[in-house]
Amino acid sequence: MTRALPRVFLLPGIGGDEPGLANLRSELADSADFVLVDHPDIDRPSAEIRDFAGIVARAVARIHDVEPSGKVNIAGYSFGAQVAFAAACELQEQGREVGLLALFDSRALSLSVAGRRVSNSDEASGPVRTIADVASRLLIAGGLAEPLRRAIPAVGSVFGKPASLGLRRLLLQNLRGRSLAGHRTGHFDGTIVLFRAGEQHIAGLPHDLGWSAHCAEVRGVELRGGHNSLFRAENLAENAALIRSAIARPLSAGS
Image (tube, rainbow, N blue to C red; front, side):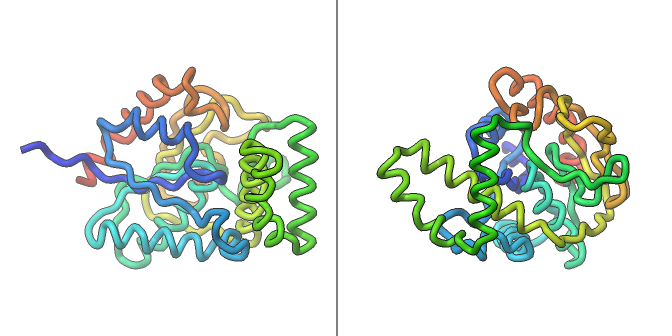
């Protein structure tokens, strides 16, 4: 009888389930049964998209639905790592045991370098994207998130799918980013397996990205590439091999 693969609940980044993460799941299909736990998307009200406590509660409920008892394994990328960590803490408080907690290139919210708080962000972008990002932030701050959200289908009809996808990502990025404001990172009574991008565009970041203050132990693994390129074709096979090796032990202990 073939033994079932260990199940891992996977929380995606700020843009949701994107091709790179799907490629990673496919590459690791021999090692784990991934269950995607996505966040409220653009079809939901903006207040729900930027409600971090609600996002975490939704993730925890989904985990309970699929895995009602026993040990659970959780992984998260970027923004999803923040959700994964908070969900793991909540599950522990509820008496559930967390086996694997894997975080992909996400900085603890408490992290500071040279006395300055370091926020989670993508790699540096060009001037056009920067201007669009600032405009999106101003519209959200001005209370126009809902009209902007509802306008996305019309933008696609007039300017094409790439324009609507770009607007969707900007809106999600800024709404979900705002959800972290004021959130206090808890403490996880266990080990974090931290996969850190080898290329960091901010100098002086500690290897643990600030997570040691919030858990019993951090086991760091450096991956090839930057935050946005970890799972691209040129890095996928090598990084998947490193990930497979790093998660094998905690998954086998959790089975």
